[in-house]
Image (tube, rainbow, N blue to C red):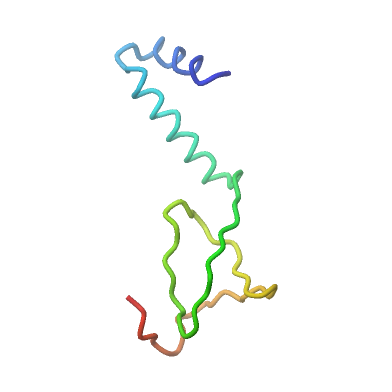
Length: 89
């Protein structure tokens, strides 16, 4: 089913909804579905800097599954690190 066909179906039941609004709702539903089912996975690469522990993440990142540094998987911390970093904000 194409997006246009879905919009036509929506407008049959909700004739007050404009096409642009229906398209936005369908796109939002698609994003939510992909995030909840984890059907879409991507890799993200960040260069590391010496003496830096905290990095910002891209706004599109929903969940971090693994962190790897030079082909080594980094174990996830259960508790906060024992020392504070100067660059932590």
